[in-house]
Length: 164
Ligand SMILES: CC(C)(COP(=O)(O)OP(=O)(O)OC[C@H]1O[C@@H](n2cnc3c(N)ncnc32)[C@H](O)[C@@H]1OP(=O)(O)O)[C@@H](O)C(=O)NCCC(=O)NCCS
Image (cartoon, rainbow, N blue to C red; front, top):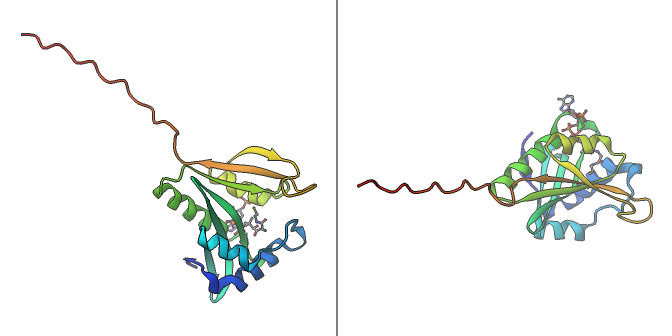
C-alpha cells in the first residue's frame, strides 16, 4: 500500500474514515468539508489506500514556522499494520527536507497507542493542557524538534604569526 496526497475529491472518504476511527471515544465534533478545505489550502493530507478504500490518513496544518498534526487515524481493520507509522515517518522526512524546525501534536491523555506512536518517532511530551478543547477535554502537547536553534560554532583558530 502506497502513500498518496489526498485532495478535495477525497473529502467524503476522509470524513467517513475519521468517524469510524474515533467512534464513541471522540470528544470533538467530526471533521467538516470546510475544515478539510482549510487544511488543504494551508497544509496537506496524506493517505494510504487498500484498493479504493482509504485505510489510514494524516492531516498536517502549516502553523508557521512549525507543522501541526491535526489528525492521524487508521481504519480499525488495518490497525497494527504499521500504516500510521509509515505516514508519520514520511511527514517527518519531508519536514526535515524543508527545514521545518518543529512538528507538534495534541493527544488525549488516555490515548496510549497514539502517544506511543509519537514517542517512538522522537516526539516528547512538553505540556499538559487541562480543558484544552473545553471542560474535561484535556490534551498532552507532543513536540518533535528537528533543528537546533543555534548551531554550535567552533571558535575560529588563531592565526599563527609567520616566522620570517
Ligand atoms: C493511533 C492510530 C492512528 C495508530 O494507527 P496504526 O496504523 O494502527 O499504527 P501502527 O500500526 O503504525 O502502530 C500501532 C501499533 O501496531 C504495531 N505494529 C506495527 N506494525 C505491526 C505489524 N506488522 N504487526 C503487529 N503490530 C504492528 C506498532 O508497533 C504499534 O504498537 P505499539 O502501539 O504497541 O507500539 C490508530 O490506533 C487509530 O486510528 N486510533 C483512533 C484514532 C486516534 O486516536 N488517532 C490519534 C489521535 S492524536
